Image (tube, rainbow, N blue to C red; front, side, top):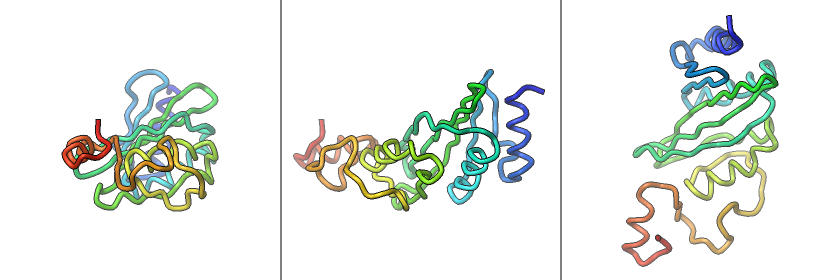
Length: 157
């Protein structure tokens, strides 16, 4: 069994809700979708028990009624695991993972600034990457941002 298949098997055995939601697309690339209420326990298990010690990036997606975030983790063998979760766009609240991955702080600040996510437990700090004078409630990577802010004479492109 390959390293990727071992990872998939362990996660599906440990977390029944992941059955059929973990896929191996190619060598050293694994993807999974998880509900937000289960996200934290999966990512914590991967960090503490499966040697996924580093977060490479967080990708944000505006998918209409929900915002999705893909946390890209890497282990010692160069396997990248992309764990996707989503929250309602109307109430985009998640828990931070900075206590597990301190290096996630700036990635999480990006999803706060650019998508309007609320990450509970994220340490206080400066905005990133937007400037401190950027208008509140203006999230430039949401699909509806350019249209609404341009029509109102706001900061749209």
